[in-house]
Amino acid sequence: MPEAREWLMQWLRDAHAMEEQAETMLAGQLIRLENYPELRQRIQQHLEETKIQASRLKTCLDRAGEGTSAMKDTGAKLMAFAQSVSGVFAGDEVMKGSLASYTFEHMEIASYTILIAAAEAAGETDIARACEENLREEVAMADWLKKNLGPTTTMFLTRAEIDSDSAKR
Ligand code: MG
Ligand code: FE
Image 1 (cartoon, protein in one colour):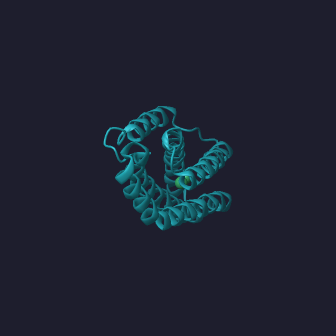
Image 2 (tube, helix red, strand yellow; image 1 turned 60 degrees about the vertical axis):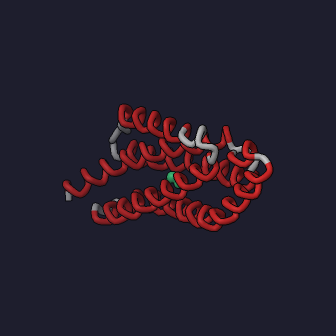
Image 3 (tube, helix red, strand yellow; image 1 turned 90 degrees about the horizontal axis):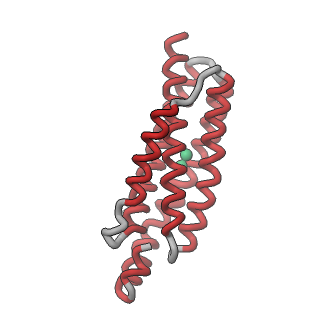
């Protein structure tokens, strides 16, 4: 199925760009998060996972003799940077960040679910395996974020009452 393989490679490159975007986004949040240690720690952990996810995809692309798309990656990084800066002046950075992170994880979950099906259709079991590993980490991160949306909100509101500056990040 040459057509299926071509789409698979295209989507793999897209996923690699997505992980580079994730890395920029998570690193940007980490720099500014000060008063939410648990969130900070989980983001730190996921940042490390994200770097490994990107290299897993890079290995798949290298083995297939395909490169990553450098221009697209740069564009994605710039977009992620712009995103990670938004909310800075809104006074609710931690909430905007939580919203963006939860949304982003679900885009990743959808991407890997698609990639796994495409890899299986193309008979690329190693690629399917790599995407399953990445998917597991995205699901775990999404679950953690979901559990923490409520507590983070409560903490934000409680702190905002006392000191709006420490509440926002
Ligand atoms: Mg990821
Ligand atoms: Fe992720």
